Image 1 (tube, rainbow, N blue to C red):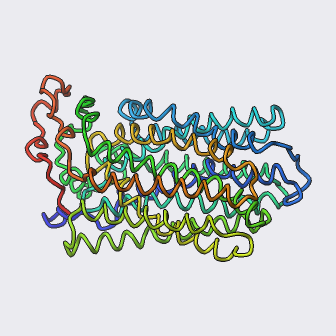
Image 2 (image 1 turned 90 degrees about the vertical axis):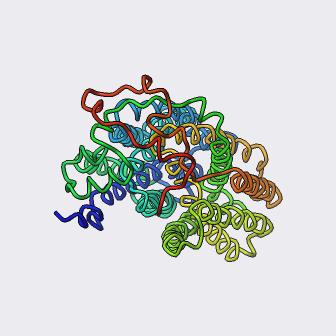
Image 3 (image 1 turned 45 degrees about the horizontal axis):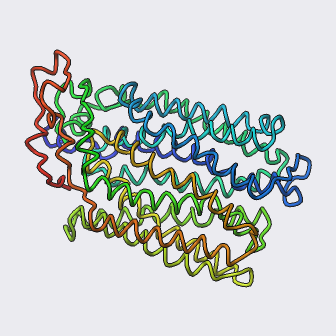
Length: 482
């Protein structure tokens, strides 16, 4: 093996297979998370779906409880997920997450027939508890498998799963509900998809490059050397620099922009079917299909943003910091302006409303490269825990959005009430990105270094005592090379 081959490694390798598996992980779990918004319309309006299955007369407030209950569980397991990833590894955490989603999805129709909307809420809380493990596990896994030069690509491949999952949840749920399986089929098919992913993950995934049975030596050396890791690195128990994290200004900027995006995502993902049914007067089949269009745009545009980001970095037109903030500004302020416009449209302008919602979601696809991957830029060693904190706190807003909508939108056909929701969401997006522009940073933080803390605080295995980390020498707030 030549040194050149070792330096470059394979162009397409096991690291990209891990990204594809993570893409599918987000996809199937997002179907399980978001199919409820379409299913809820089918379950409460049998005239628009297969009438052979039960119909429930739930109030708008009860529906808002059902929609928000996922986040009641989701917010609880974010912090434990960060510790669990460190204890048992990202592979096991993501497996637990998806196995639980599989089982709970399969049980959903039985729970509803037994206990009504209250039981539905309990089950959705349980799904939230399981999926709260997902993003800390994802970020930790990407951090272990992504050399800096591949980080944008691997990150985009992975996070494209969110748009794909949302697309499928919206596009196929209405069709399934109208078919012979009725609305229960939405949950059975979701369980089947999650189960297939679990088998693939069990066979093909590994916590890190050295532990993979499928990886070549050249690719393993490429990954480990690019992140300045030495023999035995993955066996080290690196203490979390809590004080440094909680006093980090870039960390708070990242938290703020994440919270604003969480509010926007929760509002649009869960409320789009209700808005299209109430204001635009669309039936469930066309509702589901048109609700899916924004996520198709989001999926496609995420790769357009990747091409733009790669070109910017290859030509060195911007620094990494400027590139991420520029993409995030476009993907936050553009949708904010369009949301205000959408709020003034009614059923006489249905085509324009759908077009603007599609454009809004496509433009918003840049937040993955713009801010989410910044977690790994700032701290690859603590990416799972940092993501657990950021995602956990920002999810509190996701928990509140259905409740706010339930209070403000008492009549789903009222355009004025939806204007308030869209205007509030636009304002939150604007402020969140402004904070990120001023105080955010992609610099590798000093507290990410293995020996940032006192040497005695870092537990090492016997094989690691013969090699010391070089990270501390290279992290005085300088950016990674791309």
